Length: 235
Image (cartoon, rainbow, N blue to C red; front, top):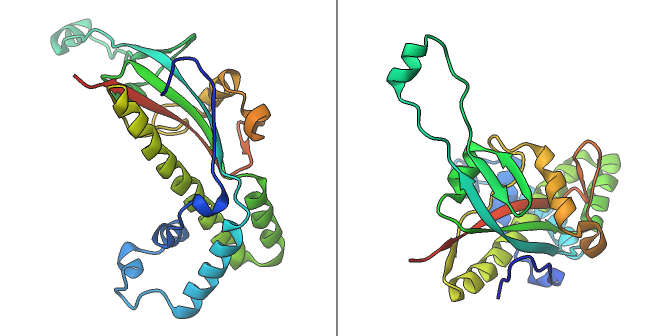
């Protein structure tokens, strides 16, 4: 059950976060054809090194989220006819949709498109914990190749955890007569990273999951994600 304005805390143990080796290779920059075994495939020694790094990081995971659901309104601008624009003899600045989530408001064309048809939105902040960051920092000083693999593994694990949690939320939403839209994070499209501040003002990120936001809008631990997930009523 996902109730409006209730703060929820979700966590899983490390073993419950699936490993996706193909995604790890993708984050490392390997072409899909190579990951699928074409063009010579990935050398055996690289596979063994990556598997070792992934296993090492897997045991450190402290995957958890804090989230809430808030009412959503989107004010789409009235369309201006092309003819009227031409007659004005000047270019007009694009008017963006106004997104209202609880008490916060901001403009975005791309997020409005993602949330179109939704009456509620989930705000979620997730992390796989500080120990994954520690591994990355340690190997940055000791072994550049392993550090790059750890970076890729961290990116894979936070997405893997979120995909699994998202599936759980989808079931809960379906039971309430909603379908979920895809996750949309600040920093994508025209949604500024500045929007991160709203997540931290609404959600007890630091108190519940140890997630902080610096003045430069960088989250710590680094392998963390904030996202909007729209809830559209099923007619």
